[in-house]
Image (cartoon, rainbow, N blue to C red; front, side, top):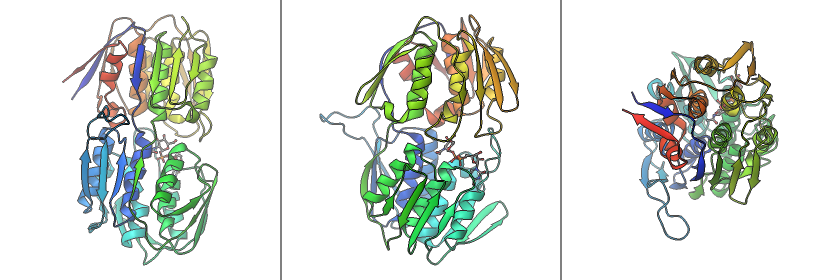
Length: 429
Ligand code: UD1
């Protein structure tokens, strides 16, 4: 299993390009299930989760073609193969097996599109994962309201419907993939569906934009009420995946923690208000350009307290990275996690690097220390791993991060991008 070796203490400097967003690409790829015509996505990141989703779609009968994309000016874009065309005309096996779903909870996103288009879906329950129970009851509740007959047997959700019908759905909590699943399913339903308490995440908006380009009639995405007028069929389209706001935020944190000066291109500060606001409170100077963000860090950061909540508030997917920067900041930060019940596993690993962190339920108290020391640490989930990378970049001496397959699930070319910013990083096979 690959490891990441980091020699810390180098301030990150320079410029890198941000990749397409994992959390936008995953639902977008599933949207291709809704039509018999080919759908093309550009700016698709090279990530293990994307590979898993493509394998899942392939075994359902979807034809997958991946090729190098072009960027304006005619040159090949950074990652060859970032254009993916999906053809679901021969969809014949509406099944998502446990072996694939267990590695990636987002596989549940096939449920809505499959039942809407094929009239049937059998999708494994994702089960527990490192950051909490994460049930899918809201996905099931919404599809049931649309007329699907759903049973849960032998660890699988089995859904059937001749044609879904419009419904008014109020989700008990804000759920991102739940909103996306129901929005996709409703596109082919008969009549109007209204999703209330909908997730407002930019990835939901990106999906709605793509669905509308495919002939859907979705309005209100980005607000907490989304209306979908069902249509009889969707058609093909081409859609560019939005930039990854969490990857953007992670590199901003890495630059901040190391006292660096970086410019991130192909991204936008528009989706990152809560994160940028907090980074400015740490003392960083941030310049937002039209398609780029520059961050200049002070010699030492001020501690900043955060509380995670659904968009547009501070994202839970940036909580771990902010724990890492607070570990070396001046003062004490209070970090409240309100989305997932067990998302502080990085704290014990950060403590092994010398951080001073106390946990009380869903609250972490982080007292900044003068320096961290390198050690061998274990990555436990995707964003936890990112926080260990940031800590390793600041720590004195060498840090080895084990189980970096978590990072490969969600950060495209992480080691190369860090090296491009001057970090001393090596991937050990
Ligand atoms: C998505 C993101 C993930 C992010 C999370 C919260 C993708 C692929 N993943 O995950 O990176 O951390 O949003 O911003 O976009 N819940 C239920 N029942 C449900 C659905 C959710 O109880 O049916 C609970 C969850 O356990 C959790 C909360 O609702 O406590 C929010 O979860 P949700 O927004 O659904 O997370 P995901 O969509 O899985």
